[in-house]
Each structure stands twice: as structure tokens, then as C-alpha cells.
Length: 372
Length: 122
Image (tube, rainbow over all chains, first blue to last red):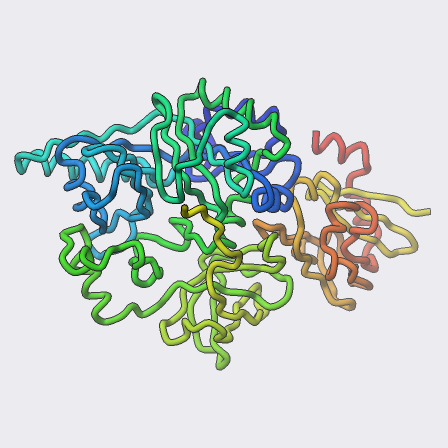
């Protein structure tokens, strides 16, 4: 995407000064790599602390007496069961139980929630949520407000992220994985991320962000990391990218994401897509998301067709590349359910050559979250 | 004596005795980023100008490298099979991609010299 519609990060000047190479993603001009390069940026995030500008993602605050009820309608989870500061990975589903977006919702207070949405879906998400809220209002006593927040959003990821934040004056001690708080006015900080490492995501005003970035970059443990390494990190961690690994045509059962939907909610939930999802669960998904480990060094990328040993179509690759920490190519994709067993042998068609791939347990690199 | 030519697609050719050694420029390797795999051609393969000769794969993407002139592959840089990062660290040296016997040396006249290439990348 080019032209006047391209959106620019509020901190773009800092990325330029840092020597970033930019590329288009979801309508935004994003730093893809810095002079260190994707390999070093990736490994640095696993060993020390990577700083990511993820301001293309959108924060929504949902508040009011009807907030939990609205979320329970929009998402297959129980918002009211969240404790204050608890976060939950969830989705917007369509009526066919296809995934419109994947989201993280954090309870901020009795009637206040924070939702983090993907860049490419943010506008549609907001529209969807406002339309639902309007219906709720029409039905009577569900007063709910949806605010799209104007924030810079930073992620700091890696085993030394907490220590770097601490040196920058931000204590994270009591915050554990998948929890979020408002440590200062107009700040939202959660212990979460998209790398498989311990880390934090911080939404804050541009002025505060410039201060924080300056303090963090004084610390040699911290370096800017671009979108290219963000992608290789999340792929090694087995985390889905919406638009590739999960789409409005894919349901949570096929995607292997049913862990995000509590059992009671599956059975009785009145969320959008509930009936379709129950039907899918009853008959079993026809295909399943799996990790794929290509043999040798050649990456197998999104779109590659998969075949079984007898050359019958077996599925397709949705994400693929090289895993700098794994030290070999890594991929994810969908295969017919009977084939979705760890160790099964398949073949990927890469420019006419059949590359052997093993179905591999996800993640490729172990998660190292700080759970308490 | 060897003479070096460049293409607008960011390749270099060093020509000596009717054989061209071909690689990508330092500018190109910077744009591609860290390479993790190079798909090399088989010696004996005949290529026309514009055919895909090699595929270089970075962490993020695969990119074609085209034959800059007509000819026949005489050798591929097999050192890249075990160390594709040679293309990043020594694009115009040990990171060469392939050698080819030129079918028509007059095609070289259409290529850029170093000064013209530098002007091209700005």
C-alpha cells in the first residue's frame, strides 16, 4: 500500500534516526529492520530486551454498566469472570464462527475493559463493536461506551525487559503474565507480548513514550527491533498472525485455539458464532493448524501446498520463514485432521520442488512467560 | 583483464575469458537483509537473459536473481549451501552466486559500469 492513505507512526522520526528500513504493513509504514538486521534483532529479543513500536495496533476502552455484557456477546468468553487486571486472549467471531480478529481484553475495573486489536482490523473492529453497542442500547438497559484511544504502543520483550524497565523507573514486580494495569495517568501496561518471551506492552501518550524510549535506549540491554523479527519471533513461538494463520474463514477449533474459550461458555454462551462453533465441535474440524518443520535449510513460506507421501493434497502453509533461534526453517499451516499428528511426514511444494516437512509441536521455542 | 559490469536489478558481473562470475551488489544484500538460503542452479543449465538463475531467501522473503545475459551455468558457489550469509558479508567477493559462459558478449554493452550503477542507486 502506498500513497496518501499510508499511516505513519507518531515516533517515525525516532525510527528514521535509528536507521530503520520501512515497509508497508496493514496500511502503515512500519520499521521492518534496523541496521543490526533481522537475525541480530531476533536473537537479542530472546537473550536481552527488544523494543518494538506497535502503535499500529489499536487500544479500545469499553466502559459502562453494559460493558461485560457487550463483550460476552462480541467474544466467546466471560468478561464478568475476569478479575480486575486479568487479561484474556479472545476473538471477534462472525456468525459462522470465523475469526474476524484476535484480541486481548483486560479488565481495568468493575465496568471498564481495555481491548487491544490488530492494525488491519481495527477500523472494522470499532465499527462492529459500536454496532453491537447500539443494538444493546436499543434493547434498553445496557449503557456502554467504546473509546478508541490515541496512544503510542510499545512492546519490550525478552528476559531482561523487566530489568530495563526497572532501570527506566518503571517497576513491574507484582504484574504477572496476562495481567494489565494503569500505572500512570493515560498509561496501560500489560505483561504480555508476541514473542514467547517475558515482556510488556505499554500504551501511553506520545510525550511519555518519547521519554520512556530515550531512557530505555540508554540501556545497552535494549535495542529497537523491527516488524521482520517480530514476525520470526511470533512464528517460532507458534502464535497466529490474523490474516494468515487465522482468518474469517477459519474457526477457533480448526485453529487449535479452543483453550481460549472456557468450557461453560462453549456450552451455554450466547456469543456471536456460538451455534456454528458448537456444530463444528460436534462434527469435528476437517482441518487443523499444525507446526511444520521443513527438512534442510530452505524456508517453506505462506501459500505453499502440502501433500502426503502419495502426492495427495494434504493442506497448505499459512506462515513460514526461518527461525533464527530454532536454527532451521519454521512454518505453520493447516492439514486434514487425520494427518495432524506430530511426526507425520508431508511434502511442501516450493517452486516445483517437493520439500519434506515434519509436523512439529508448537511452539518451536519454549515460551518463557513470567506466570507468578 | 577482468572487467566488472552492473545491472539495474542490482547484480554485478565480472567477465574474464568469456566467463562471467555473477553476484548481487552490496546495496542489494542490504535491502534483502540476512540471507538464510540460496537455491543454486545446476552447472550445464542454459539461461536466457531475464530467466531466474538463483533464488535468495532472507528470513522474511524469497527473491529471484535473474540471468543478466544469455549463457550456460559453469559453476555455482556451493559454499553458500552451508553459509548463505557470505552473500551478506562479502556480496562482491566470496558471496558470488554463479559463473556462466557467455553466449553473446555483445550483450555486455547494454550493462552499466560502476559509475552508472552508483548513479542508479543514488
